[in-house]
Image: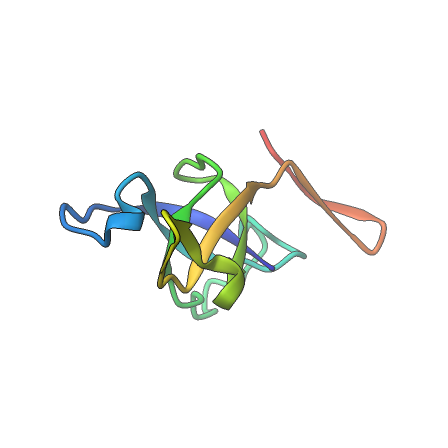
Length: 105
């Protein structure tokens, strides 16, 4: 699993049948040491954004937990829908080396 921040949504009016009930989110990976990027260098390259299926009801700006690969597969009516990433949790806090690096507002 990986941490990411929701940066936006993706609207697709035509999707695989198993995805019809799910929102698509635009995510940007974040570091556990600085999930909101508050201390990132201005010169640092932002990490590549990607799209994930939302199973947690996350909103823009939230820090989320994402699974990738086969763990992200959507099963609907006995059929598997190919997905590469899925949001499975909204993060309340992150602790790293005994220090709290993020607390949900």
